[in-house]
Length: 461
Image 1: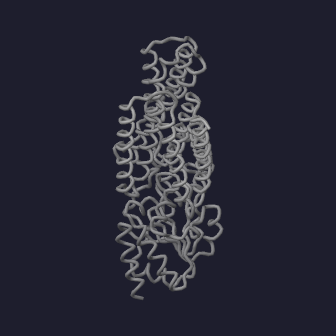
Image 2: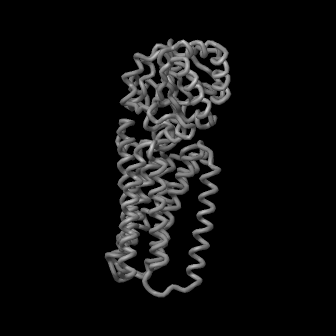
């Protein structure tokens, strides 16, 4: 058996582990093992590529590769260990951006080696443009999520500007491909335009759409990696890129469906950055506070409680105390479930990961379509840090930017307790009509502090 045959078998095995890993990621119970399977396959593929490569390789190259792998592994391990759950979305954006940057760098390095072959140059330019857009767009998403870029920048006629930028960037890439030019100026000009377009692409997109944008950029990175697989005739790189690209695309479309908004509207609508429009003007009624003791009594003597987690739960790092609240209530004979909206938090699956970290049983996590019919038979809904995903304006106010977006039907419950730090609008910048519902009581304060007091109060009953 030749070295190439062995490498092909390794690539086949690695591709199978990617598929298995992706399949296992579909359930919280198997997600961790899925990651380990995929990581094992990738490790084998990288090792095989390095040590079973055709041709002579200088020793210094192995040393440099080993050094780069060691540095990257240490940085990645430390970052993953130290990152807070609230910072997970921006870390995902940053790591995704690095994937796009790698694809772009591959294109820059391989361009002059393939001049004269239009097919390979087309692959190189496609990887360059898509990878660069993914890189710069992901960096902007990272800055938005970590608060560095608090406000979205909306230039006059920005949709027209973005369209022109896209046409010019793609047009220049096509020209470089068709002309057979070796010009470094045109190559790096395309690279710069693609980076600029990535920035302009993400900068105006509103806060509430960031989970969709992260997923979309992830699919871009996968597509760019797939072009690298075509370029090097590397099956495992091609398979991995296709899986990431297709999974990211499907997730993006599913999230758009969950928001009842077409992808075109997400990209060009900048949802959430126009403040509350007419919604705030229609707010009326009074805000009703509830004390810790009253909330404890209400929860303690309920038969059924549904908890709706949101980003505020992650900010307060209150996932462990809310799991303790769940366990205490169940000891008192209360049925407890969690209602998970598809776009709750700052990235796809944010709330699922957050609650899994505190060992919440995955069977208690109910998706929106599954849990919505149960709100009418629920005694108390406890909303912790969620805002836009429970706002009835999505169903009642045609002037609201979120009108038509499917939400959790918490207003159907008998009692609603909302824990928030203040009356500020949610991430989408839209006021919530639910706050003024006669059945709603506001429990103000940091989620961790408030829930800790609530648990202590229930224990004393």
